[in-house]
Image (cartoon, rainbow, N blue to C red; front, side):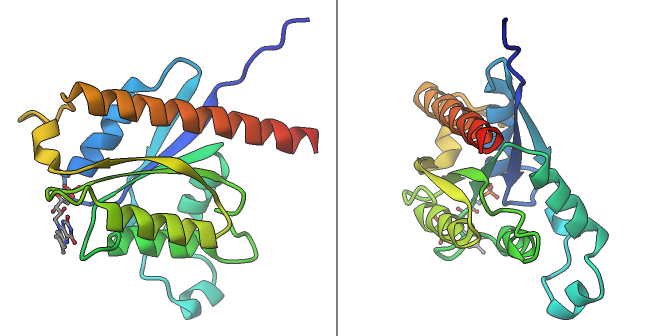
Length: 193
Ligand SMILES: Cc1cc2nc3c(=O)[nH]c(=O)nc-3n(C[C@H](O)[C@H](O)[C@H](O)COP(=O)(O)O)c2cc1C
């Protein structure tokens, strides 16, 4: 009997809010390059999440926090792009991770996560990437060692924010493929358990 392969669903999250963000453009490039059998949907409402506050949480999760958790729940894996703000990730992204880390759901626990980052300096947003990895690892996610770190990011995009650098395009496509393969294996492991 032939087994029909279900598409792998990835959730893309960009940690910068500005419309001309390189990290948002990087995530768009990943969506466009996703191979057949891999669907990437994006969560674009990070700014709607209130600051994490235990009192707000105790009164019942706000709707944006529920939407964010539901988006993660319905994905097999998560692809995050982060800017670097003062050697860490952005406040909105850290805030979102905090919401999705909380018990009893611990929505990020057990999720396979890959991280990319871009900064305009030669650092390649490595501080941002590391801070995201530390946070999601603490939240119980399985974090891929593989990553894409883009220094001097303005050189990799054209004026229309299309990712034109062929080496970086290949790196992004490679990371998406690795994440999708690991997410597929993890969901099959869960089914078999
Ligand atoms: C508050 C703030 C702090 C920043 N800190 C750093 C930094 O520590 N290292 C770095 O390489 N770039 C830093 N930058 C520059 C960002 O890399 C640059 O703004 C980048 O384009 C942000 O990503 P985006 O294009 O996705 O918005 C900082 C920018 C801001 C606004």
